[in-house]
Length: 330
Image (cartoon, rainbow, N blue to C red; front, side):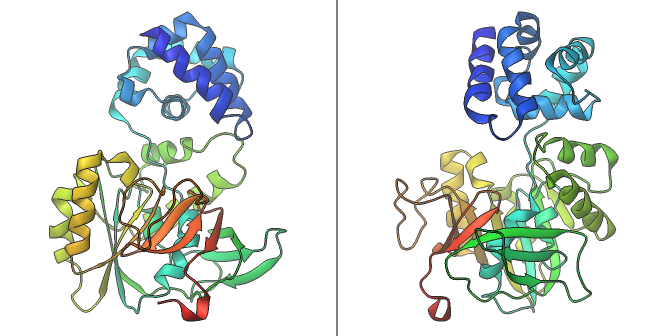
């Protein structure tokens, strides 16, 4: 089993961490070469043994952001706690920057809006009206700025726009709710540490952005339901205000649902009295209209009710409008 750990961490060190986090690259390479560390990680179920999850757990429990030898000493000294915590956790990336490519799609929908997110984690993507947006060109030149009605937010989402930019406006959100297998509480110190620990060292500005978003969510918590989205979404959707347009979002969550359950959930969403906005890899499902060529499509697909709107970076760092000229969009 330690061979599987070696292969996974060696691949992460060679293919995934370079250019994104030098420290995680060092830690992963160290794991691949250290039999004692691999023996500890082999005790974790293989579905909970991903390097970003293990590294985030150790950071949440107090591991220093230093070289491999100090991280190794911490892991060996706290092995039982780390194994238990990893076995109970899952990666719950909750990046509010994903809202940048979703904003032009939300702008198509007349308010007021009741917003329901599946796989909501800590709920940071349920507050598109509480954040500031800065849309920039590829060279960083500001193209457009949008702030909440009350003025600039502590959370500023800066995203590169490639090509034409459709009209954007701040959505009117009157109800917020989320479903997650393990919802996180933005006001709980341990949950906050977990979400911030999922940010890789070296991702400049991201941890501060998430911390500021957590403060916004903690001050006005959404309704959160623990459970499976397929089992819970219909009842929660029915509780939304009847005079608001229900919008259900699945930003980056469908990839974590097994194939059969994923397609059953998509069919369920298509039959609910709601608009459905998603951002997914092109090959993840076949609900796109028009069909998307996964071999040539850049990044993820942003769509509303299956209708393709944009290509985007999975975390929202850039997006490109793909629904024709902005003035003629449906």
